Length: 543
Image (cartoon, rainbow, N blue to C red):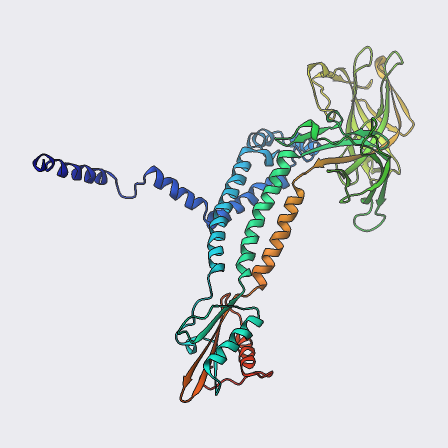
């Protein structure tokens, strides 16, 4: 049997050697590559880089108007930048926080932080259970130390040292046989502060993730006096979370009854608005047997109205001129307040009117609104946002306004199939109307009346279920940061031994955080061991 097996043994060794030789230097197996990738991803350096990348990725969301935050500003920006708009849309810069690349950075950061924190937590748990290290053999070699002589027995000095150190909130190492020293340490919570700080980042990210998945955010422009009910059809723009369902919407309703603005009368910002206040009437449940009693709230900027888990924010305001368009047959083709969008801080505004019911042809109006109109050397200008001399200036178009081709923005007039109405001398017809005036349109198109002005409010309605989680994460971050900054881990050793018929007591301390002064600590420990209340005098050797 031995002769049969002997040829087989040397055959296996060359195969193993050939496999090893076939691997080139630096080549990794699949398992080794995965392990290396995981170590790189869960390193603190990678976590810091991903945190920086996430902050940089959020910059476009604060610079470029976001569709989910303010659809009106987004539309205006797109109209002003027609060349950049397709590029930004392809990159998702109008909805940064819902893009796959932002989500990928977010998820990688969470994995990296978890991979960093969990191993450190396990290491710390093992370290916190371990007793303080033994005293160094020569305490006088430490930078900060002191010594004195006494006639007391060494065991009595060490016993009193344990009591003194425990009284100063030090954790003392259990006595070992033959060890003539006491080892103690405090400041373990410093590392806890570091761990809490890193854990808080995960908590904040989880809070934002919960809000993004289960919450929603919507916007609506609401003229004063117009009721609002919390249903999807009432919103001008609505951005739900990925796991949001319509059943999560709370059945409330509200009406802004009055809106007050405080205007600056002097100074470099004279004419601009300063304070806003919307007198709001609301119900938490509007219909059925569960209808609640109406309540009132003074809605202001940064003071949202909280209805259940939903918040209503006041984020803007403007004017809605009341315009009536009569067609050539004298019938009312359009009437009501028309929202005009502010173009600057003086509330100089732009808007359109689509009288699609006019006969014989549809009539479209496009123009601007001046809250305080002034004529500066023949050029129209707006002086301030307050209604002192309102003027409505409109251009007129007649023809197909393109509403049969599908949905379109209410703030954009489709003029592809409509012709601009001209005056008899061939110039564009411009209607300059003050409050209460009516202008007749040529060619039997009808008339336009500027009835008056109403105010509108731009409201953001959102539900963010993870905001308390994120708030808890921020509080944890502050607690952890304070702990890591102000808690100083220190070690103190006391050794007592018989020398020349007496007892030599040596005390040394070490500040593990670096840069801390432990001389006062040593003096107080020595004073307590000697029974003094004043600072001890160090001998010549203990510098």
